[in-house]
Each structure stands twice: as C-alpha cells, then as structure tokens.
Amino acid sequence: LDYNGTNVMPEDPTREGYIFKGWATTANATEANFTKDTPVTESLKVYAVWVDEKDAKDADKFTPEYEDTNGEVGKAVSTGEPKFKDKDGKDTTKPEGTTFALAEDYTGKATIDKNTGVITYTPVAGDTTVTIPVVVTYSDGSKDNTTATINVTEESDKDIIPYEPTDPENPTNP
Image (tube, rainbow, N blue to C red; front, side, top):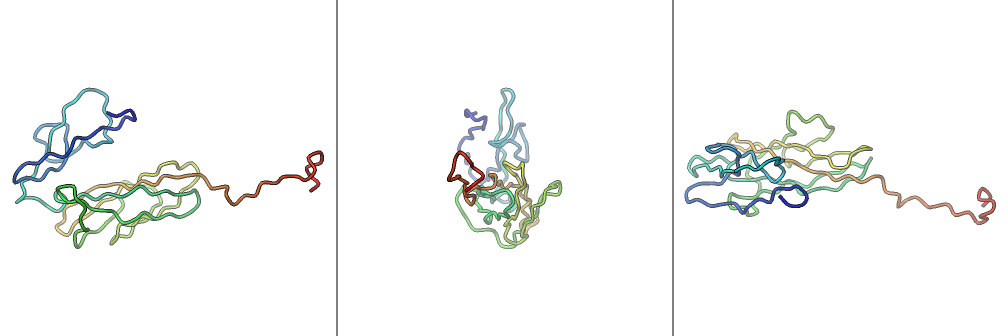
C-alpha cells in the first residue's frame, strides 16, 4: 500500500501461451477480483489469473480505461472515449463492434453513447467525485467492467465582481 491507501500493483507477469487477466484473492480463480482500489484490512496473498491464448475472448485481450474528467456543479460535462490497452498493456484501438452501457445497478443521471462510450453528466451540489460504472461489450459477447471518474468543483466565482464601496463609512452609498 502507498500512503494514500492505494495498492501498489506489481508489473503484469508474462507466461508463454497465456494472457494475464489480473489478480485474484483465491488460488485457481478464473476472474480477477483484486485491483489497486481493493480495500486491504489484513495481510493476504494474491494470485495471477491466466487464460490460455487459444481460449481467450476479447475481454481477456483488451482493457478499457477512462481518463478522469473534471466537472463543475451545474454544468454538463462529457468524458472522452475510453482508451484501450492490449494484453501487453500497450495502447490499441477499440475493437470493432464494441458497445457501451451504464451498469445495470447504476442509479445516477449520467447518459452514455452506446457506440463511443462518451458519458455525459451534470454534477449537482454535494458531488465531489462521481464514479460511473460502465459495461463494455465486445462483438464476441464477452464483457469488461470499467469506471469513469468525474472530479467535481463548486461553481466558479470567476464571474463575480466583488463590490467595493467608495465610501467605507457609508457602504450602501456608492
């Protein structure tokens, strides 16, 4: 863990003929369930999760990621399209036929373009960091889960001109 409580992840391992899917908290896992954001409350082991290259689906070969987006209360903001990395962690293009949807359990007011993955959201008072879960579906039917993060600031006061009275003894009389 680093000082912020974030797990410091090791470099992805390699294994001839296999694709690394991520880390899991149980041996022989078939799905990764441990990330840099997984809470750690006690000592634990993590195990590499592998899939044979000949059995790999698109979700095993690609990793979608959104860059954080900054937003302001009361103003609609759109994320960029998610970026994709290949099995070696290198930037690659979005696989043909990929679609995007908000996770079924998401109850917020964001919308998503099903073809591009661009998310639009209008932050409201009280929002500080908004995390929007996204399901990425590939043309082979396999799916990935990712999130888009919008960091929210309060309304800017850059358009407010402060009032400075010309007569400090009588501030209501300009």
